[in-house]
Amino acid sequence: MKGLFILVALLISFLWGLSPVLHKLVLKNVNPIAVFILSGLIYSATLFIFMCSQTEMLTKEIAKLDMRDLAIIAFASIIDAFFANYLYYHILKDHESYIISALIFSSPIFTLLLSYFVLHLCTFKTPILEDKKICEG
Image: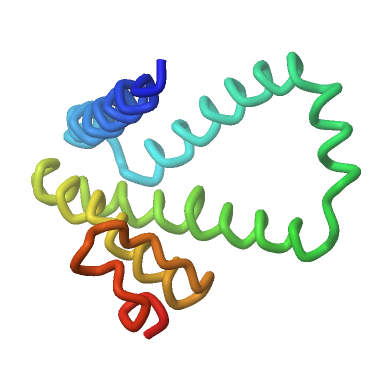
């Protein structure tokens, strides 16, 4: 069971890899803004159905949020769920899905760099990079 997270991560990777291919099929005939809006509506409807089964937990968690946490969630949602997706559909319309996916899914590099510089996390676990001088900058 300890390695189950690897299978789940691979499933997520597969699903995220499938998504641009499916979107590209639709974008041949449909305006990217329409696909963007319809995808958002379908996602919102699905999220609402899921949310209805999680109301007790959600009520408890919302009560714990302070303004900083709420601002971070709002900022991340605007950047990720809106702005990045808006750009994604526009570039996917005119370019090959495998090229767009390869570039988009290089995001772990940015996650690593931002985690280091913003959160001051050092996640290097290899003998070469484990030296404190590297982790401390």
